[in-house]
Length: 232
Image 1 (cartoon, helix red, strand yellow):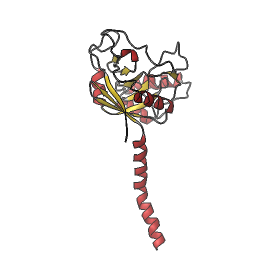
Image 2 (cartoon, rainbow, N blue to C red):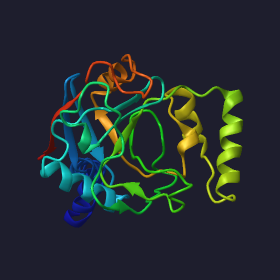
Image 3 (spheres, helix red, strand yellow):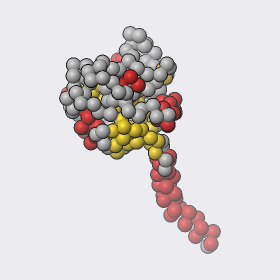
Image 4 (cartoon, one colour):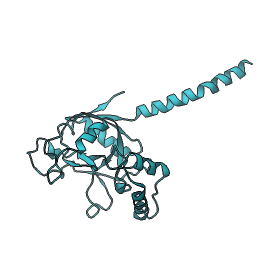
């Protein structure tokens, strides 16, 4: 009887233990706070892209992003930062070419990580000079994007399938996310998505809507005051 009671208690407590384990695993994912002039944006990094995760944490701990501008902003698309040349840049200066003297290999974590609204991904040079689609060592963008209509979705789905030679396909859940939340599916399979905004998405919304010049640089600087790794 005692043995049976012990088994029963163990089974009853199992859901709680599983929930705790899941919560702990989620909690352990590294988080970075981007304290910007618009507000604080919290980015949670993905373990499925370890090279990008570790590189980003290293740069944050070194203070690399402190004082950098969101130098490229396109409404209803994305906001981009990470160019060291943007620190104390003169008004109107064209930016976007700076970074460390290395690149990172493409890390696709398909189908778990893709370009839904709030996704954080590594910028890179174009396919014509970068056919392996290696990432910039420091520049990244945060996705905003638009909600995708059912009619438009078929085109995006077919395009991804053709581009990847049939290797990548969208799941019904991914399609539902794009239709309900929005994003930039035309970038899927081509850029490394290594994190997501888990707090402060309203500040991303604000930044993506600011007025910009012909080079997509905000007319009034939007800056990362400080980036820091959040310790749980």
